[in-house]
Length: 242
Length: 94
Image (tube, rainbow over all chains, first blue to last red; front, side):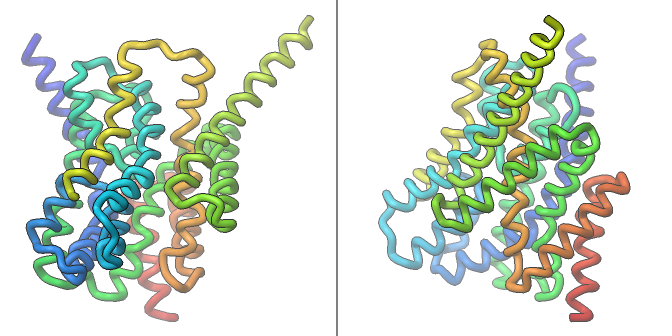
């Protein structure tokens, strides 16, 4: 029995690794550039790799570099990081509903690897998510991010300019590649995504909210609105029958 | 500083798994959380995809290419590769 379980988890782990390949590809140009920028900002290679290992959050790491360059204080940098990454609370809460039951310690360990990208891949997967899958997915993304940062620092260069440019689409292409098959399932998905995109555009373009908060607000607003509409529709049907 | 950044990043990622452990959330909240992935994807893609390069067409063409390839039913990796290929061709010619 024990054996069957571990074999199962093993193949789930591989499934996770496989699902994370497009993330790993997408992280390469971003991580190389981070390494390069960290070097020009004056961080050591140890600090650069440590930051990628300990923080593992692209947007806030980039932001910290520009804040360091500006001579901003430590407390402010940490606070900014918190604000930028608070959106992961929403994502983690959503994933918590989707993962299979397991010991809390395993969940805490793989929750460390939740990023916009790993979340998107995991959450669009059909059915429940196993612990093995989550570990595989997050590990390949993590490895790509950490190694990419180190390599970017060491060689002091990104990819050739043209490739770097065209690869900047990679993560967005992945988001689109995850969203489109779900869109075919129904109007609700299209509506959710379009609504959130509109809200987010309004929030960021009018500069009401910073990027981190704009994503949180746009996501929450559209998720709640669509749910309310759905409930009203159901009620309407019921009272119609009466 | 790095450790501080790590802690404040980890807390929001980990907290829901402890807070909501083994709890049945109210159906309304469950519904909202089920909607979150698709709303997040919409907000992550747009408008940020327009600003990946100074040339706004870069994002537009890349996103369109990805959409077409994905619509044809291709695997996510093929979508990523396809849109990188299309943009490589675009930057060769323009």
